Amino acid sequence: MAVNHVPVMLEEAVSALAPSGADTMVDATFGGGGHARRILDELGPNGRLMGIDRDPDAENRASGIRDERFSFRSGAYDEILWKMVEEGELVDAILFDLGLSSYQVDEAARGFSYVREGPLDMRMDPNSGVSAADFLNTVEEGELARVLSERGDVPHKEARRVAREISRRRPLSTTLDLADAVRDALGWVERGGNPAKRVFQAVRVFVNDEVGSLQRGLEAAERLLAPGGRLVAITFHSGEDRAVKRFISSREGRCVCPPELPVCVCGARPVFRRGAVRSPSGREIEENPRSASARLRLAVRTSEPLEIEQDGS
Ligand SMILES: C[S@@+](CC[C@H](N)C(=O)[O-])C[C@H]1O[C@@H](n2cnc3c(N)ncnc32)[C@H](O)[C@@H]1O
Image 1 (tube, rainbow, N blue to C red):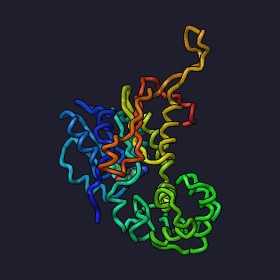
Image 2: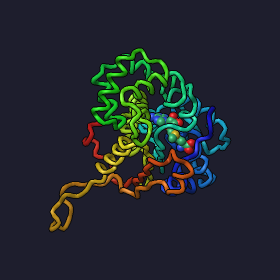
Image 3: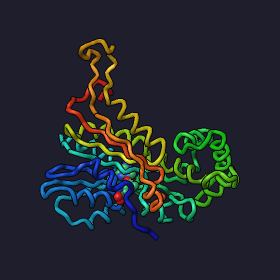
Image 4: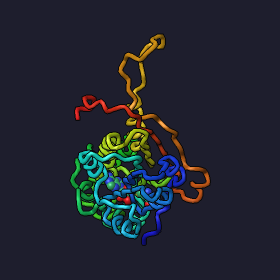
């Protein structure tokens, strides 16, 4: 029962990506292709857009785009972007629109929904990695509590209660088994939203190694972008947003020389110039409540070469 995915911050993202003429663009999270189609509208006849997604269903959707400027690669974006680095490619813009598409959330059989019953899976690529059920049924209780608070911002005390209830109920096999465990651990206190939301987020982020993938993807992006190239990331929770913000800050090469020095001697070399940070408009949130937590960050690649020794790669 999949509904269409409404692309979040579409106009803001396309304006930040600034596709034009013969640019080479990458949509690292193709999903339903909402952003991709809009990018193609702006590109000239010699432009190119590559879509990437690790979800096999996204490949089927991508095959509906019949445009010779468009190509699609199925797989994890970090792996594909690093392959492009090894092949010596350079691109003009890269988009990361993180998280899940509505196709994934609304399809009960994928196991992402805390209100629809389905197998406890949550893998974006159901053919690789460990399912949520396998993880939850084997992880040590203390480690689970840590994952819940680090990846879902579940307060420590609540994370420990949920982890205890999950280990007491093992084995869990459906999404509602997990939602019920959360409800019994935390009760139905008026808390501004279903407490299962953060727990499901934490498990999903862990099972898909979303933060590690993002970190590796960003590190590939800084090597792939040509001078003036645009990096655009739309994030949906604080862990993701922190990772993008820290990455950009660490590449801004802020000069720490005393202000009285006429030239910089500290060796600060900005690899990225920070652009605007945007949130969805009130109107977009009203029309598409799933956009509410979105943050869009833009960074523009300078012409500085990378300090290869900096990260040992
Ligand atoms: C929010 S949706 C993108 C929606 C898309 N921008 C649109 O307009 O339809 C995120 C997509 O990224 C994919 N994805 C998330 N992490 C990924 C990764 N590490 N590698 C490849 N695809 C990933 C998901 O499978 C999902 O389809």
